[in-house]
Image (cartoon, rainbow, N blue to C red; front, side):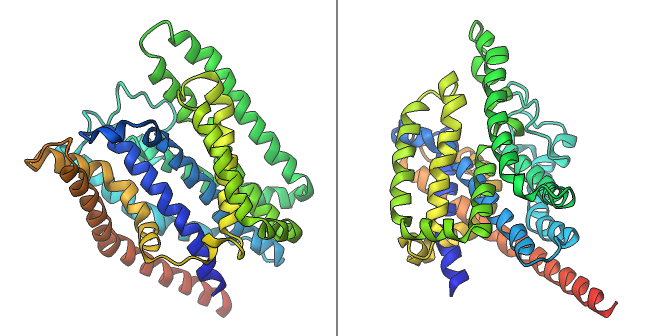
Length: 373
């Protein structure tokens, strides 16, 4: 029951995150007028909510083993991540490569960028327009690769007690790098018509400038795992944490009305991460109403969120180019949403579920072999 409720609380936030991302990206296609509102425009922060959730969930798994004096099993960890992430991703990438009519924009990046999960470095929207939303998956994959290795290194060098300072240092360094890149790349670009593209390239996409959400999640996981009193306090004030997160998000909304400004880039990003961190911390606490509230809709939407993330631009493009409806109509909007969900369901049934079954067999075989030895 504990795990069911725990995941339910976070599932509400995962469902919210994919909704924000989907609506934000829908602005790039034909859409009803309300999609142009500033509120929908703030949907770019849905990615930051995903980052906080990923940092919290993945770090919690790793930290729980440390707390129990168990070693981090790198092979098992990477097997889990591989079968969860890679097969659906490769299927979508293969579709883009094999069928050019599926591409929502003119050009793909080089195949090497996609296969090495380095698309987010040097991504220039003037030359790459298709499957660019994979930039955030690249950051998450880099995170999945490095985090367990860094934790093991901290254990090896016996710097566990100082790890919180390393987190804070990385947080500050990310902000410093954003400021540096803004002054050295974005500010000069304001003299031309490339300032927005430059901002995306040097501030929005690189991993080292987008660490706020992931580090917030990792920090929360560390506090909740190793400092039970912190979680007890958070639990006692969990609903107040939700309200505090909302207030901070409202402030961030006004700061980030124009995300490419110096203030939004340097101060708005961490404020968004802190706001969503409050929500994630609250949703993981038993006293929070999100933790206790059950919803089949949000649970299923969260269940499909990864497949929706991968497929939604492709499906919206195909539907709008093939169906004879007014692209700015509500009917087209609802049809595209239904198509994205239907595509995600197919992906789940045909690709994700079989791969997860293979993953479970591989892990079971590994455990059996370990004990037989």
